[in-house]
Image 1 (spheres, rainbow, N blue to C red):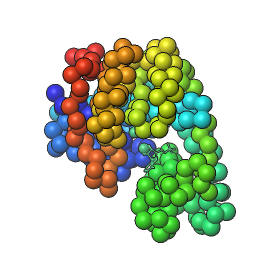
Image 2: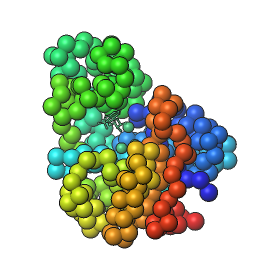
Image 3: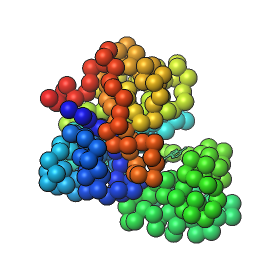
Image 4: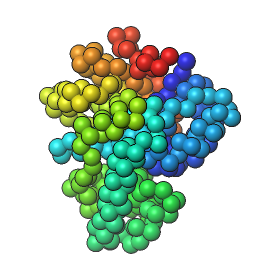
Length: 275
Ligand code: AMP
Ligand code: MN
Ligand code: MN
Ligand code: MN
């Protein structure tokens, strides 16, 4: 079985529709795909229909934004019941913050000499929630930087003109939403937060104490060292290990659906909970 347990569609900041995403996953040899859009489950219905038609497994997922001290941390929920009221109320509140933040970001960018940022980002969001990625696409379109990573660095991260601090959900409440909805909670791309080892250990401990299940050990944004280190943390904290590309679309050619490194043998893969 080839699993890819982290991916995005146009329901958040991916560029493929749920149907296109599932088709591509199947072409890439994925047997079970989790769609894990940021703070929304809106793409799951379409993705499930497409998966049924094509004959691959679709795991209902979501990637939830958490504020943990000064850090933004992403918690993936896998195998959730998307009709769960507590989960949906929580996601709704995060989208309301996103809406407010988008206006703030646009106002700040406007001050920094970028005209029409709100309408520009909205155009890329195509009626779905607004992410910084949509602002980034507009800024590239305006010629403000040559590509998405450059635009983030210049405008959208802390200390830069379009930055607005996250005011996301609490770690333990998010783990509860996911568990309430019958799912398993996973710390997404733990090596990407650039935390000190002590701080990362504290995060994992708090997540474990809140009832979290797994660490994403294999990730499209982890190198071999990261994978090795996160496998050790998973073992030390007795957590399951997940594996996902964090695919956002074909514009980013160095990440592909299903193109994942092997799960380290010391790990207990999260899919052993399901099959
Ligand atoms: P948001 O949740 O709206 O704050 O946007 C976060 C998203 O922006 C992440 O999920 C990534 O897809 C993207 N992102 C964040 N930082 C970068 C970066 N440095 N370069 C490219 N994309 C980024
Ligand atoms: Mn994203
Ligand atoms: Mn993420
Ligand atoms: Mn992601």
